[in-house]
Amino acid sequence: MLEVAEEAAGFGMWEHDSSTGWVTLSAGAAHLSGLSAHVTRVRSEQLHARICPLDMPRADEEYKAAIAKGDSYELELRVLGADGVYRWRRNCGRVERAGGTVVRARRAARCVGAHRGR
Image (cartoon, rainbow, N blue to C red; front, top):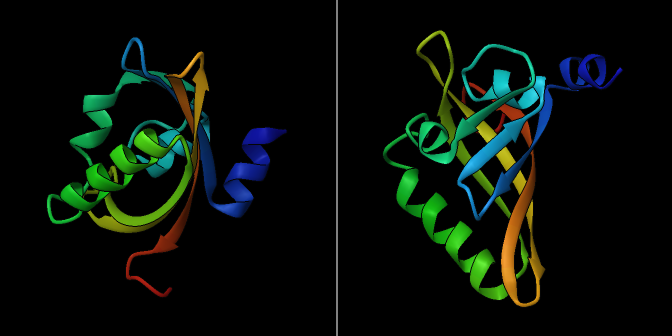
């Protein structure tokens, strides 16, 4: 049922395990990340490689700030699709801590079009 909702709404969810660097993506998140549309697990570096190089410094800065504050964040950036086209995506995430240590970041993403504002 989740896959149907993700496809209809153009969104996906994923979780980044900070201790291992692995990211578990829902089918919708995998599709929005330019990967095959099924639940999958990849290294965070693989996802970073799909972010537009012009957006990567800002994305990295926002994520590091959220980790430092233990806070939530929201960010729009371009991600390379499977068809080779960059599309704008809005990410909303929350950093989770255990005993003062960041253990994971949970995120949701939504496609906002081939061009910002769509």
